[in-house]
Amino acid sequence: MLRLSKRVEYGLVALQFLAKRGQATGQSAATVREISDECNVPYDLLAKIMQELKRDGLISSFQGVRGGYALMMAPSQISLTRIVNALEKETSITECTSTSDECCHREGVCTIKGPMHAFQGAMEQLMSSMTVAQLL
Amino acid sequence: MLRLSKRVEYGLVALQFLAKRGQATGQSAATVREISDECNVPYDLLAKIMQELKRDGLISSFQGVRGGYALMMAPSQISLTRIVNALEKETSITECTSTSDECCHREGVCTIKGPMHAFQGAMEQLMSSMTVAQLL
DNA sequence: ACGATACAGGACTGAAAGAGTCCGATTTGC
DNA sequence: GCAAATCGGACTCTTTCAGTCCTGTATCGT
Ligand code: SF4
Ligand code: SF4
Image (tube, rainbow over all chains, first blue to last red; front, top):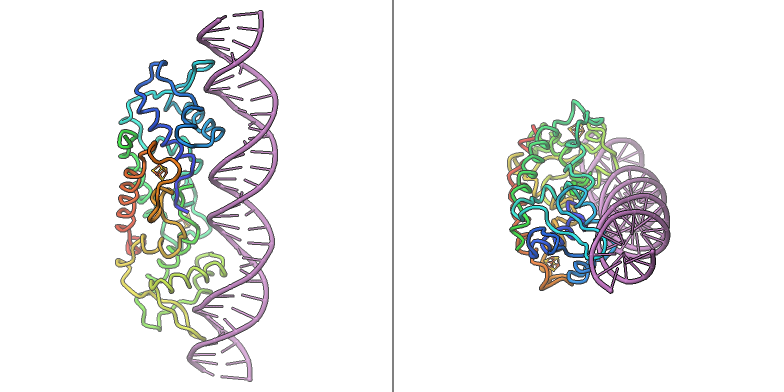
């Protein structure tokens, strides 16, 4: 459908929320409940998303009571590419541009692979140029 | 999933095939069966795709025996945007950037809409710059 | 120590979109 | 008239996505 998943959308909203809180000091951590309530995002789903962002090193977490999440870096350092890679399973624009593929059952006839890779590259560059800082 | 649908992929393959045949003279028309066989694309599905491309004015059709499809314009005139618009149901990158929307239930809190529209615009421009001519 | 709070993470369900198929109708060249 | 082709709707099957639930673990405050 050529659309970003809800995960990414929610991820962006959450990161924007965190960015408004300022850098990670541990004091400024926001809980999933807070974000979920403030931003009208389903709690459980958002919880998963935050975990994934954490796993990917985009944000840091603080466990236990008084815990929560906070940004690891400056908003201008967090690119859309990074977020998409963390939250989206498949990021290649077509099967052609999947990693390390041999061509499918159309080799010899269709010469789409090259241009598609170029297009994919251009798109990734475009996504790299968009950061959380631009969401504020 | 941030991936072009098979429809678009097949559409590109088919258009590339047509482009190799040269401009529409009626003599150079290729049948769906031909393309399907040559390119290993499921017949019925491809038939649908060609109909949609025709409806959108990208290619012209010739009915009856000796019929088929042929390009309406120069390959360099057919942009990816055009193809995607013809074959893909939803083309907005997020719900935010859907046409004419009021914001969803997050107004006031989330300020994603503006940047998202900008991003969408950039992507459309990128797609406009890619044409069938580049597939040859 | 204990209990409340909050992250960690797996498993599951239901809905929606996508891919692919089937069948009948219409057009048209031979 | 017949065969080859485009038209076009309806349908099934599969996969992906969104969302929920439930159990575990860490940690702060008292
Ligand atoms: S370039 Fe053509 S043959 Fe190769 S993977 Fe893409 S579609 Fe398949
Ligand atoms: S900008 Fe925020 S509130 Fe507006 S439509 Fe997008 S997600 Fe919803």
